[in-house]
Length: 481
Image (tube, rainbow, N blue to C red; front, top):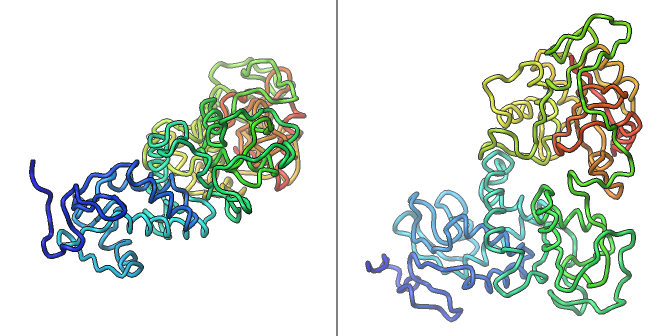
């Protein structure tokens, strides 16, 4: 076996791979560590600086695969956390007082000191953004580029590492209840006089009412989020935990839930939680103009001037997993606007040569889509880029106006409340959301393409009115044609 590469000019920081410091961590150049060795220090400094320890572990896995590189293959990165000569290394040197050097001549950096710097930086960025995953994006890309495609690709990689490192949410110490949820800013994760990972005594708080899940012994919010993900819920574990907390405001500490209590859980796309009964008729081409006696023609274009709308020409596209999705696709959770317009674009022949993912990115750029979504002016800009007019109606639930626009041969984008749409209806939550209205069926129900849930097929006019009225901003409708 070859000896480890040692920079003899820096003996204070180097040693053989088996040599350890008082903390017990290997100090050798290019020493291969593992999660079990690092976890006590990750936990220690995560608690000290308010960072998410699992995100810290995910970053180490991504940057080094737990190897304390003297210098990475790129010639500029160093250590377990990828401190780059032209990136975060100068910040580390300023914070630690250690002069590391650059390139192949750089000193080996003590692992524990790296864990502390990583935890402090991610903790500070988490407080800044209110999200540990946003903190990870800025760690990798910097403040100016954190929301670009590469930033979200890095976030996705961190989430994948977390899922691999912590199967079922379990940490190397055998549990997960002590892991703070630092994606929720302003929360004290440890109760007065308590310690992380404790269990509340019966009667310490009242159970959450109007719930649909009874907490069993050994349950954690992470484990419950895992169950929801297994049923098809989109988003990371932390995203889902935040939704659970929003539905259950009496959870003052996400690390402490009590067996026997009940929780109200967010709806999973495709599961029928609706009190409405969607129209039973299957979508099909319908003559929306009773006065037009011209015979029906198969394959009629979906946007016409003769009152015919062929909903089958409007495809279902997922905002989360569109065809052609790769590392360049980003912002899926906020892409309902450009995805609704991409469904119309496909129907009218715009965007040929692009994959669905490329088309959504393209339209989102035109419409100014951000992590907060798309405004109605952005939808109009997308329509103009497609060579179509856009007429906007709102705020309000203008259901009859939608039907009239469809009668005129136009397609409609409706902006309502995701959680008011069956079959994923959940009246305990609210979130603005765009869908494409592709036509009407023979019973007068609206045919809908929901970019977040392919299980949405048809909804009644009353259901559409409820969807629009429930939007926190009042609801808008945009006719494209």
